[in-house]
Length: 158
Image (cartoon, rainbow, N blue to C red):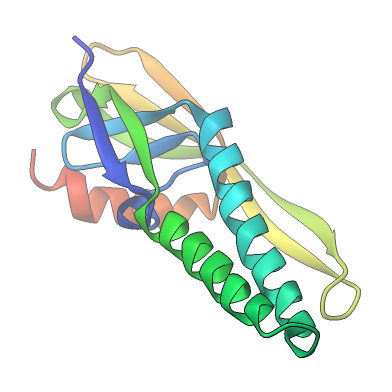
């Protein structure tokens, strides 16, 4: 009963629930091949950083400037065109309600630009299905706003 969807990463940025699940027009999807996605993303950022750092060697040899621009352009292109595979886990027509449980604030130390703590509101989404069963999605950042967004954008259609 699973259906798969291949989408560009930039198209699901607002609908990302917790880095593993994504809300979409047909329902809630689970990302497939997450380790490969992380490796590709790291590789693209690596190309951009190496390209920027090698721009400083332009005074040594002008060809380094061209190589740097190629590396930066390739990294940006990879980020812009990167796709992920999504597998439909819960269609909207089987969802009765989505509620937030276990809401908590988590502080994370940050070092850039100055040392400070950044607080995140985390919560668990409980997806109540029409057959009475419950599915839980853990560690959703800004859970209350995401539930309101999901209900306004997707659950009004069904």
